[in-house]
Figure 1: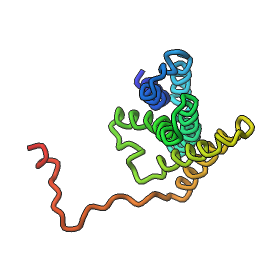
Figure 2: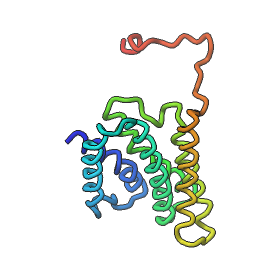
Figure 3: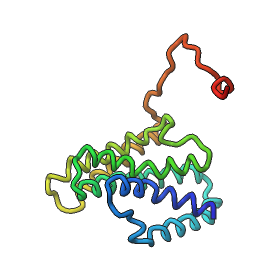
Figure 4: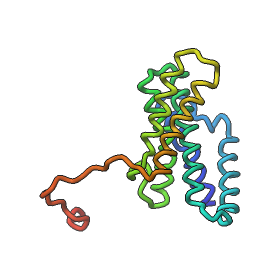
Length: 184
């Protein structure tokens, strides 16, 4: 049950928050088969993952594919609901990353979006390409495919090369309190 819960939260968490923020009926309450799909995939991964030698790498690549799909879907839903391109970018980013953030918090891990990886940047790139291509009235799937490809390429480049964006550096000479001192 825990495995199914984590998979379901990951799969529908970002879209749930998006729908709540834009005032739309939450998608999976109208189509509960999304919950069933998350549980089915959780079962598949539960039984197959132990047999995959490099399962962490495989999961990272599967996550990159999901990130690519969800950043575009989130942006598309926002545009179809009448929101601006800026809001569509935010909703694309949120849809793609928030489920994973909830997953990592539930599993007591540092959220992937807060690590040095090129993750949120990839989702933003995919949503941006979609938002820029959508008004051009291209044949139906071109804008979606363009956004998905942009996200996947940026994420794949980061994964394959071990790249990351620069992280925040504390100011030199500043005395930061320890966790124990903060508790008092």
